[in-house]
Length: 308
Image 1 (cartoon, rainbow, N blue to C red):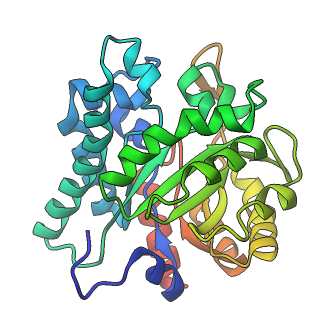
Image 2 (image 1 turned 30 degrees about the vertical axis):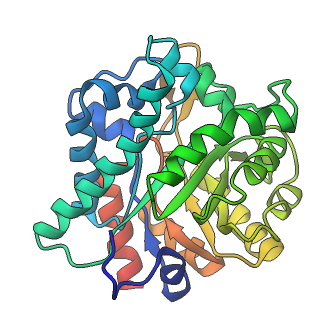
């Protein structure tokens, strides 16, 4: 939420580093909400919308300047499986943006003076499947079929007037191509972030080729990675900056890995706020956390970047 005198989101990227929020799901779970559901955090858009606003507010209080909406796993198909029609589903998409705006207003009422923005999340096709496919890609669908899946939801999210559309956790360059086609003409800037392993997308394409898709896309104001291991971020940021010349977005998960069969996280956390200065020096201008990265870590990121 910005005033007339505040910079736009794109202008802010040119002025310095913008701190993103962390994982919405882990913040909701820490507040006692059960997200063991195919809709994941989007279920609370129906059942407990105030909980979502409170989670956004927690990240603003922690030092984040961007709230990423609860629409990652919100789709017409997923809501339809719960008996929710297209009209109500569209209202829920728009509600996700409204709840983040409400949290920004509350944060300003509490005395937080920095500009606060809303990123409307659009997860990949695999998120709707709720079977871990967003970490694999290769769904067997054409680019045209994926574009038809994404475009209606993106139109509604753009119509709710977020500051930016977050096309996130994209595992496959083919899906990125579909998303870039789907956002044309929507009038809202976009960031595109891949889920990666090493120097390749989760589907196995070289990152240089994947990032190049966004190099000449006017809608894309930042490109990068999210929900990957922190150890993979530095190389990806350097490749994205070199290939596209655009600001880079970086928000990895905690370093643990998702077991789709058991619906749980395994391994040890490796995320540390000390890593972010190297990402910034490599070209990252949007820095935060994804799954299992909470408000305390976001506070550490904000303080580390401010000190640097």
